[in-house]
Structure formats: C-alpha cells, structure tokens
Image (cartoon, rainbow, N blue to C red; front, side, top):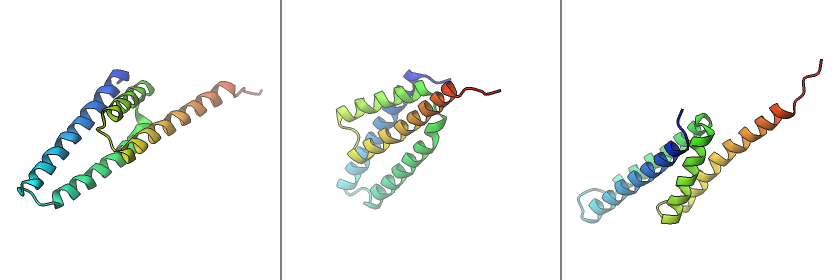
Length: 114
C-alpha cells in the first residue's frame, strides 16, 4: 500500500509536470507558435484533473494523504500553486481526514449493548 513518501512524490511530480507544461504552452503562445485556445484547453483539463483528484482522495491511505499534503505545502512555499488550487487541494484532503477521524471515534466509543 502506498505510504507517506509516495504521496509526497506524487504531488511534487504532478505539480512540477503541470508547471512545465504550462510554461511551455505560454512560451509557444508568446512566440506565436500556438493559438491561445491551447491555454484554455490546458486550463480546462487541469480543472478536470482537480475534480478527479477530489473523487479519488477518499480511497487514498491516510499516510499517503499526509505525504501529499506535506508536498502541497512545499509547492505553496515555492509558489508553484495558485491560491484557488491550494484551497481546493488542501480542503478536499482535510475533509477526507476529518471524516476518517469521525468514523474512527464512532467505532471506538460505540459500545455494543446486549
């Protein structure tokens, strides 16, 4: 099962890859090699990926999710993630973790009655 370090590697590689593609697209558009519609398409696909991440997060392990969050904080510190991405990428995993904690506490404090 993927652990903390796998989640950390995933966020770092995905954000770095997205940054590189975005930089290349902007460079090609600025030199007139590509139409600006490619940037719109990239932004649309990026939004779809965010939705996919949110839907997949409940299936990630807790350690993996924590590693992913640490990587997210590194990316924010570096400045590679926009504010709206940070809010979404931080909010969705926190909701998943809170739900897991609530379920865990319910299991611990539910006493079976005969």
